[in-house]
Image (cartoon, rainbow, N blue to C red; front, side, top):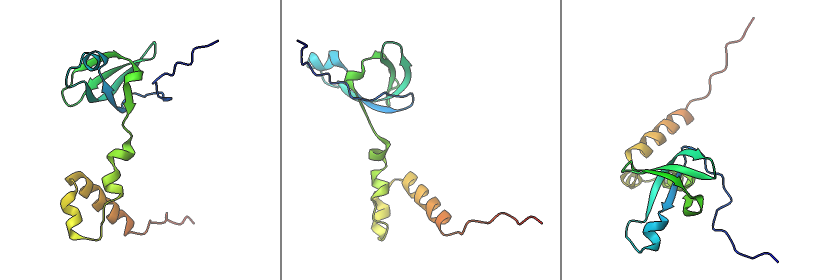
Amino acid sequence: MRDSVQSTTPAINFKRGQFVLYRDPELFWTGQVGHTFVCRIDRVCLGDTYDLTQLPKGRSILCANPEYMRLLPAIDAMRDIDTAPLNTDAAADDMTAAALAWLTQQRATANHRPELPAQRD
């Protein structure tokens, strides 16, 4: 009979360039502070491990176990832009400069009709 031990590994294949939340197991299990932080995946290694860069410090974490990693989806990072109330002047006060620039660009693009290609004879 098989043991019914459940893995904490999420059913995901992480990719280079993705952002993850990483929990350092040694720091966590020894009760130390600062055990969980944001990282960028720099390399997918053999043996289902990953090389990470801790952000913003830039410290390298080699051969990270994916059981201690959770994906930080882009949709969560962009939620403030996607749900921003654009009908008030106060809305701009709560947005970052990058979000405002992106929205300004989108508005400019949305207000112009696409050009049709020149007709050939």
